[in-house]
Length: 375
Image (cartoon, rainbow, N blue to C red; front, top):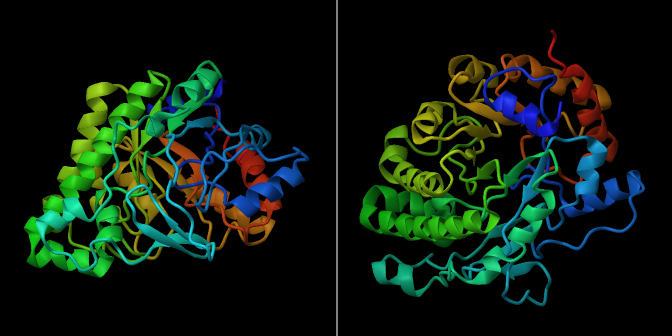
């Protein structure tokens, strides 16, 4: 079965020959040191040219995906941080002018541009809102799309920016400040969310237009609404403040590509919001982490006929552990998430440097055997 057919059948809530496999999406990639380790492990020679700079993950290499036998391939937007790197080497400025400092293993937003601002005018004046029509945002998109259009793989458009409306608002204001904003100055919070949303919609529109009809699925920018044990705000506040923003992005996508699948990444115990995600038009949910406040198996049983899942494999304990730990977690994901289709196996988040390359190879190799659907 071709990878494209395998994934499409699973996303139609049917059972293909085996569970589809994915890696290197916008929220489940490979950090650079681990990528270089896998290159050496597979004896693949020199790394590819980075598709961006100043991030935790700067490479995309189909040779690794070929070696692992995954079913998905990726298109990515063209922009990369354009402001100079700080001389100490661990501070960058993104295309919004927002500073990010490396706090291993990731870069984290520091000193938000609106940290001390509460006026509506500051939203427009203090943030370097990018020109969504700048051709740099789509540079290389058409060329990549043409290169893999007839590859037989399921093609995913990586998220156009890393963070969605809620998380980007938190980056700009600071999480604590923005949480307070939503409660005591909602007009300011909504104005900031709207400005972020409009930017994402503009970038996404041009991204989709540049790629033509090659993408089978597009990732929404990641938006984390939960900690490991519960949501960080009430479902009521989500529906009032954040859901309309995500729905606007979904509508923008559907206007251009009515048939495309839409994936949302949201970490943590997000089980209470799954009914909302379904109503909002989300087709695929990542990562369905095995955290204390959520039961992935129960979510599959309850909602598995209405939404599909991508991810599941634990990066915190199983993948850094023994080969037996890896196999047990693959078995858990297949048992809990694969029945009836509707599941693509992938890591819950980016593969980190503490994960042995042998474990990644084992995860994908074992999944191709253990994930065979019985006839």
